[in-house]
Image 1 (cartoon, rainbow, N blue to C red):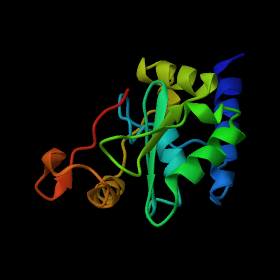
Image 2 (image 1 turned 90 degrees about the vertical axis):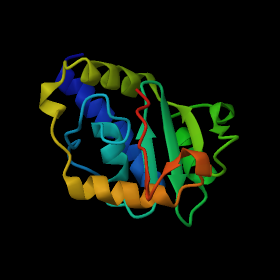
Image 3 (image 1 turned 135 degrees about the vertical axis):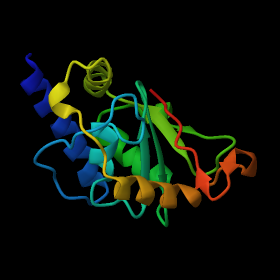
Length: 160
């Protein structure tokens, strides 16, 4: 399978997930930043259009999710069902109530690995600072223990 076919499969998986929480279908993956859990193409595509309530970071093997005013467990379970991931793989954070994490499908793990190794230059690009500010604003409301907060901002940790 060539990289175009892989990108189409990744987009299909992204759109399957987006449909579970009522987001519109994307025609293409947005560009993203290398080694950036919140700003890789997958994380950005899952949040596109729902940035005001969905917080997603994508690691090399897992997706971390939190939502404002919605049940993150239910959202995660719907995505996992769409991606055919066994629901028993859902993990709830012990120190961050309301944040859930689950394994990514192999196609997304492969895409992220190739992306972070610089093998998908067509998917690389700078993220607009407005998007960064918007995600930081959303992150301020996350249930993160006080010791991890720094002033008014929350560090967006890299998960890759």
